[in-house]
Image 1 (tube, one colour):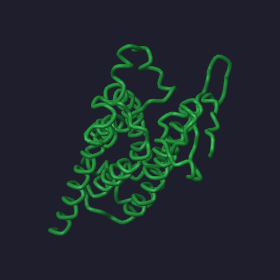
Image 2 (cartoon, one colour):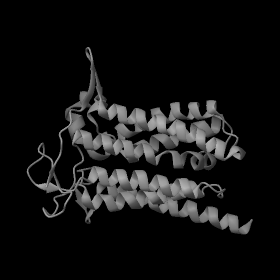
Image 3 (cartoon, one colour):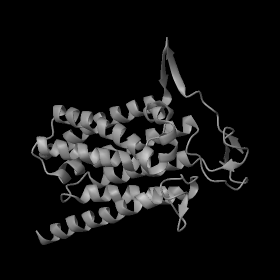
Image 4 (cartoon, one colour):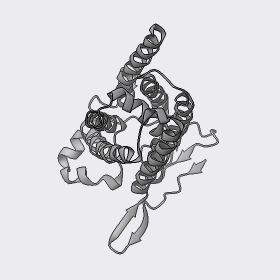
Length: 265
């Protein structure tokens, strides 16, 4: 069995300032967003996006990710803990960011951007969706470095079963890496290829919601369930899976509506 390397969560000490790996993963995600966005602008000049508009979107997106992700973690997963330890709400460098909360924050940021730049909301969503998954992969790598969100107990014969010494001595699935591969790399490749050709408005956004929701639903079977506001498991479904179901349904609706409208045009 493999053993988690227990990497120091602090990457660099700059005097009294500690730069955490988790924070660096977010920086990498935002840099990837900008670089991929510029590539996408060159590939699809008909969208009329500009570097300045992309920078503005990133600014609002960062606020949406950080505030929404942290509030989602507090409200969806650990309300009792943070109620007893309110100061910990601000300790974002320790990890603990809810994707679904971050998504809600980003949707608000996209809505604000669309309104201020006189674009349709789904038009902005279609442009942004392929830029997001690579950042999600970086975030899951940050979870792995922190040794958090570990997987369920695995068969010791599994070649990549891993012991997380900070948890126990049992072999577990490195579910953080599963999620990095599925919700991150695989979803990025699929969306990037799908969006390379012109698609009806809403199709790429719908594909993102379906793809992430399905991949997250599958990955949750290998991840130790979070307690959440509904408990660890309700009807055999984890909190992450409950939150992914509406994503999948909304994505299917958006996707099919976009394709149906294309067929009628």
